[in-house]
Image 1: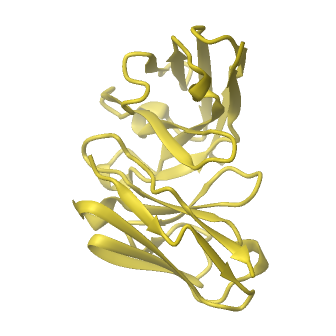
Image 2: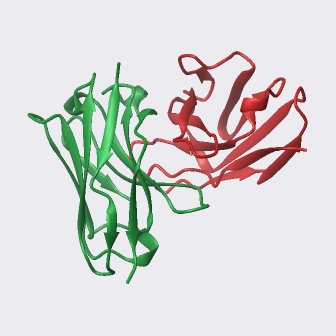
Length: 121
Length: 109
């Protein structure tokens, strides 16, 4: 059974930092596209970042230069380092794996339950 | 950057009725990379459709989808109580961002 489990959310002040973790089981994070998707309270889905099987990374414009995605293959874990946090970054952050590593398998297959990030003074 | 526009924003229907949701892309996209997701209240989203028309594992056959180029649609043939939810389309192209549409809420009339 495939599982992705997020952790690391919490309350942080504007300008602060947090690191989210996404531990995967039942799949290898270096053989799938791994993404972070967020959802502000009462709002729609907002794609944040991805890392592919080659280690190439992509970011939404709203987080570029502030957030960094990475992975630790030995721990089978993906991270999202979030710096210079803003009130508008407040959201539930979901870690999601693709169906596979092929481009045709990019669709977001396995979703975690999310970790809540609140940015507030 | 591809922008996806979903319509309508809200669809008010009764159980047993047919629902048709639209997703329009700002430029022509490959149907290979068009996906649909369902999000029930209080739950994480789940994959419904990928490749524009392929049902994901475990998705009932009352869900169907089609489309190409800039126009895509999701149809629920007969609404069951558990189908009242928000539906999102997404294009996962070669270049990020992989933006979602703004969602269509299917609510009980």
